[in-house]
Length: 233
Image (cartoon, rainbow, N blue to C red):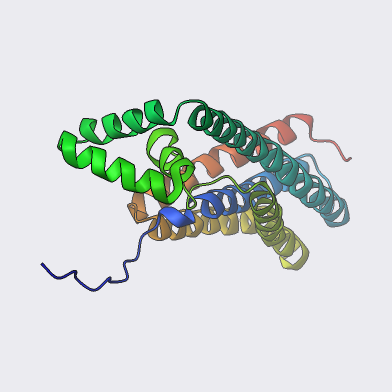
């Protein structure tokens, strides 16, 4: 039976790492900066004070996002490296047992024992560690942890998100500043939620509403706190 020609397929799993970091960063940039501006505005601060607070929030938030993402993803990468080293040691110590283990994995997935043994033998001959990493440990090239990529994506996306409420704060009419920040942030969050859902293949409207709702709750809480203190800072 002749082999069919390979065809190109479009999948979304290779976007998970950078998409998660980018969406989380932009979402946090909008929510945290808009919430801070609304809270400070409710306390009676003028536009210049709002801009100083917003720029400080942008810089601190971007650095915090980058550091947090780098540390967390690097921990995942360290775990993957340690697991691969352990698996390589087991392959060196008892290759036969590891071959049987790989065969058993394929049998457990529904492959007939004889065929599973053949597949395991061929994959082991090609690259034993890669076969065990993928089928035993669940580590693949697509989903492997990339700390620097995640950190850079988080920092850049947070800064991009934070720039939006800052731009509104700079350009909007002072009499309608609070309303402008509120509306811009809510619509931007909804758009971001829908965009990320489309990129990931999920439901657009549900994701958009979910992100907008949590953003509205955060901004409402900080506005309430600011109004309670209602002093110039």
